[in-house]
Image 1 (cartoon, rainbow, N blue to C red):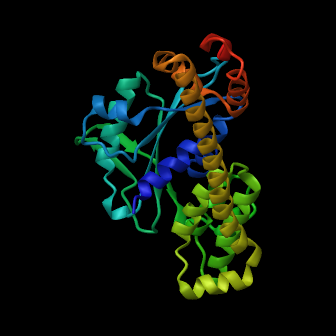
Image 2: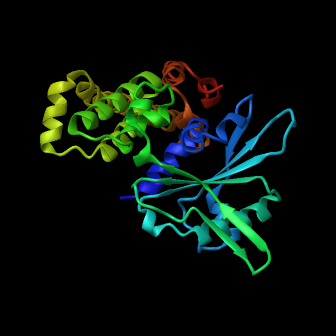
Image 3: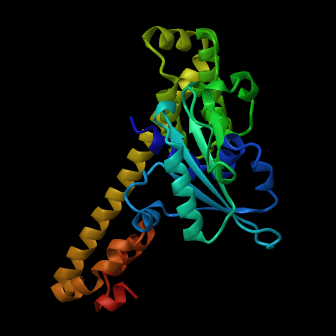
Length: 298
């Protein structure tokens, strides 16, 4: 399962809310009209080397009024703490700082499990310390779920299944609160479906838990079904509309070819295929009395 890609999508879709949850100490400095720009990971890999994994998500925070220097957040997700390599992260941050010409870099690591990981690394000799590196650690499994149950931070609500709950009842309530958050805080149908999947993936309800959830939280269960159904319905309607326009365009092109020749049809094919339904209808009516292709498409 591509957990790193799931979190990369989450961070890129909701960068400000992601920073507010994953690096709470630094997040207050981000507000006040700051702009957040994801750096293109593909370009960074080409310049920094293939040894860096795609899960790294660099976010550049800038203040338009110039009152402070840009701040670079480097966020990565680590599913298993035992796999975390602090030396690799330190190396990456130093290379990224050199590439971007800044020393204002905040490394952030999101851990999904409760295991222990190295928190810092220090290089030096008997007399001096020459390098000390540490990062912001966000252990989702240590966050109390009740503290985020009613949060207006969508990233926090979506991650409720990843937070600390003790019983099956708490797990189901966290799952339901995540669904309610998605309903209330994300109006876009496509993103609703996208992050309904996110909740489902990290909720990991077994058959018994699913049945109990459906019984205890019928509205939230129905909402999850509704996200998918609404998306499928809208997709079908959009597909039907596109199909109708394509058919109307094809008919108009055949009519033009028969009346004015293949060269005339080829000349205006691009405009016809890009036209909306109302325009195609108007052109189709004109062809009945037009003396030339220019009279149809003017």
